[in-house]
Length: 329
Image 1 (cartoon, rainbow, N blue to C red):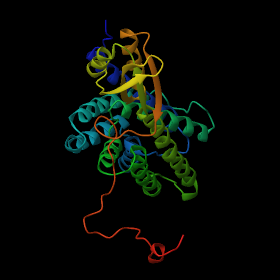
Image 2: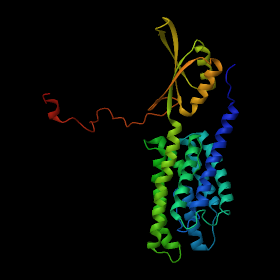
Image 3: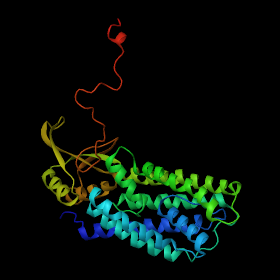
Image 4: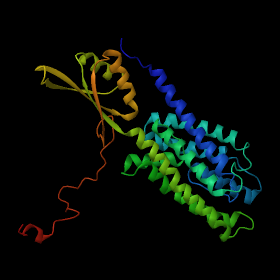
């Protein structure tokens, strides 16, 4: 009897983790960052919603809920994501946009004071860690919280920039502009009072992408399985059908027994290794298995090779020095 993994559970698990990640992001922002006494502005849609609220209150005297700005702006960005990153990403982004709008609408009225009273730095760090972990969980399951996450995903598809670093570039623009906008729209604002807020915002600029990249790269690590079993055909078929991973069959020989054996070579993500183990154990509990971590796997089903190819006839970027070819060794 082979191990069965219902596809419905896979979809449900993805969306459940996306909800958990967005909840962590919403809690980190609404509870720890938005309530900080120094009016810290972070990057992403959350930071943009802070700026919109600051402008509307300064000009018209009323607050715009963060959830309203997040939902409105994200709806305008979904068309771009559809063409570049695919429909699956867009649907999960739409799901994420709705969830994050609801969560922000729920959390924002609950937190009027920071949980760690009188410690702006601690609130910012805790909030940034929660936001980064939440974004990482969402991206690992092919979802998005919207906003600059969409732009970061597009940049990652089109260039050799990681998602976390792309987020950092776009968020830097939002955080930097907040200091100038505060000068015009916040009453009694001074640059001396705004410098700590800018510094805290820059701290989140590094902490959030770092935590997001850590979660993403940890889950994208690849492992290599080498499997020895007389039931190799059944195991290979089950891995193909149930784990959706390919198998390479190698010819080998046991030196002690002098018998020919078949060896299965399987590459998969680290988070999929438990599934591979369960499949093997359900078919042959006595199978001999080795698992090794690899530095990188590129190709279909794994990471894409991102290199800037040299045009035919174009000169080399670092040509060899003339004297190097005539040097006597």
